[in-house]
Length: 380
Image (cartoon, rainbow, N blue to C red; front, side, top):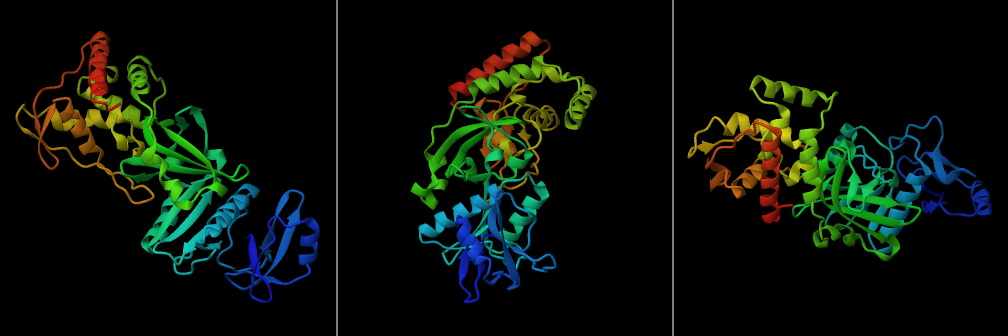
């Protein structure tokens, strides 16, 4: 921990103290703010100065060993918020939920638990800790360390299921937060759109933390000019048809078997089975898999002029508890392409058939035609 109580019950920090000051302070008594057990100072050439419990401690707030990067990051966040006048505590143990956020903002209209996540932990742990805060009316703000910030291009970020579990969504804008403690910069990745299971595109904005305010980190996404996904999506469609994956994953294998039993080949699915649904960034299944299944199971068997009833999809919520409806988003796109007609709230009527291409030439022509329509509709 980065701070402790002295024998006058005053909160003390040794972070950024000189070597001589730390040597002198080691002679004094210090206590854990959570359990009031004695703690001792640890420091060295490769160790950030901090307070540590004794080996036999039973303090419920003890965490595993933390990196210098993590320690420096949460201290930076704490100082930054405190300088703005927020009532804030560092490593405050919350006995009601048995959790210890890195930084805790209290005394305002809304309590906020800030978690600075540098290491990779199980997604189930993220969900559990988030739920603990949400269930007790505390807003969880997860900020990721620099090792998770991996750009693949000016507007492309490396993505995975771990990053997916930290998504926020405000005003149809998906967002992630990153902090580089050494540079003292906060980076927001806003307007995130799915490109592949390993990449997303969006608008990236970095700012120097000491010259910025807390509300600022939530605003760039709403003002950002988002990059077009047209060329990325066009390339993905082409690769999906022309590139043979010899060792597909289990979901891909199941999908190929599903199509085979229905008399179709996976490289010859209609273009409308690969539409750019915004909430795809929250899904673990590829778009052409779930969209093809919807089309074959719930659209194709229905005659023109009849009501199409699509089932709901189970989708995990974002950190701020947003739960999208990707099926309705998909139906909205089909209506813009004059394949469905909306007759009410999430009610659709089939207006024309969708044919499966018979050859690769037909498939590529279908792609070019559909992509042009989507570009004209300014969806991409």
